[in-house]
Image (cartoon, rainbow, N blue to C red):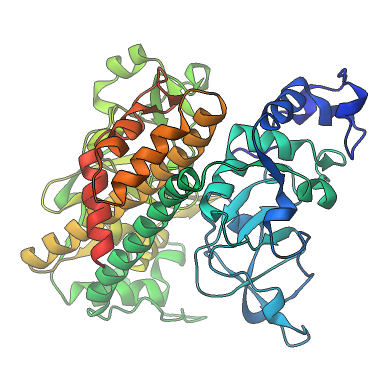
Length: 507
């Protein structure tokens, strides 16, 4: 995700009218884009951010770690919706009045420090009541304002420019000035407009929450096998010569690896090579990399456990068309072969894509791709992938070692049920991201005069009567580059969006 300081170091000399000078006197704070954005914002009805927040906006405490109480850090404030995982834990025994610093459902969070993450705003929809550390400010939004809307506004291009003006310090040691954050101008749109945009964020959270529940159900079913994935390895072990393979180093024969494989062998199982076709990705020269190219290139760094992530590199359509055997297809599973061996499968509406070198391509033949992906990402798969990995600077695996991984098998009916759950979870994460993107694009469209608030208000009134006609019309106008843009449709299948939302609502 982009941070608000990305463009900061590109303009060191700027002309600015005295009346536009704010709290900071650094040239970077007055790039033309920043001053013009703030001028534009103030042509609307607006209010200072602090006046919309109950608590005084400021950094959290400096906690001691190593305890058992969840603590949010800058890594948790990444997407528009904050995520507690991966969590750090603080010792709060010496903290008085913990309830005054707890992050509550619907609170906003902003990163106050750190190049590359500064200025990011997220809304927290959890119920764990975590605290934050000194690098994050918490904002409890007043009644009458929509937290989802305000978060979307602050993550829009316009909100980020207003935030950018408040960055102080040198590269690598930058921070947000608290007084500036409090004085950010926030456009006060119609309450129905705020609700419509905020509901898109809350719908995204509904899909994310449902996806987590679906995966938990799948794991609950798989855990019934009680395979030994938590056994600690012996410090010293003797190896039966019958177990020796072409590798003579001790790693593949450590007791916890061998014990897991032995456990899988006692039940029905298949090795990956027998249920898939294995191949490696395309050796694309870095000279052919194009930022946001015509066809996305899937590299190791783009393979996430929930979905493909941070896809910012592509190739020309010509290269993609000429490399047919490396083209991604629906249901293909890819596994990173260096570092962390994450797996993910392709959906139809993600195509076309090209698979890069050092990424294994698995075409499933006798197992659903969704379930194979999940097994490979679970401890049973990760332990086997690490069993035969070779470490230099990072871990490395090979097609042959991926092929030897044993996948436990269940009854076909059960496998199909689990795979259907995993497919819905995968799609839910994907559409949740579309919804948060939509919320930001809608804010931008209204500010830029490309969408009228009366249209939003009418759509919101229809939705309250369970009619989606105007909502569909608005969402169908959204492209990846904005409303009525030239990019691809943001939502490739609106029927699928409404289907997923209906299923998630039933849970």
